[in-house]
Structure formats: C-alpha cells, structure tokens
Image (cartoon, rainbow, N blue to C red; front, top):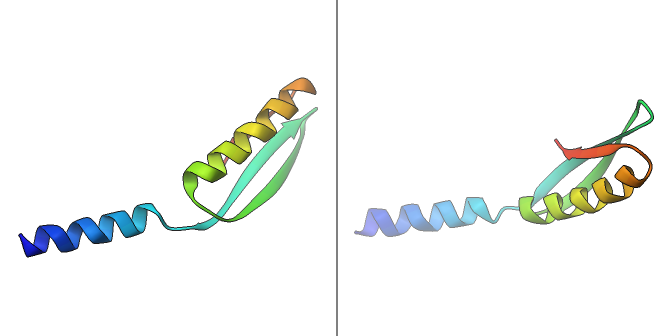
Length: 65
C-alpha cells in the first residue's frame, strides 16, 4: 500500500510539472514559433488554441510542439 501511495504522488507531481512549450503558427507559408514558458501542458494547449483561432482568421493554423 505504501508503494502505491508513493507511486501516486510521483505520478501527480509529474503530471503537474511546468515547463516550456512551443506553439508553431504557419500563415501564408511562413512558420513562426511562439514560446510558452513555465506552463502546464493544458495551459499551453489553451494558449496555442487561442493563437490558432487568430491564425485561422488570416488563413493559417497553429499547433503545439
């Protein structure tokens, strides 16, 4: 039981880690990386999705790398 509890703590700690992500946007054939620093993956995805909405207005798209 103690091993299971310790493993659960490790998994939760790793799942909530913050790190740097890159959101690459391509508009009119030009790819531009945008750094998203010190963020959880879900927060980085939300930020990149917001950039994607703006890029689509210009005929482009964005994706989290």
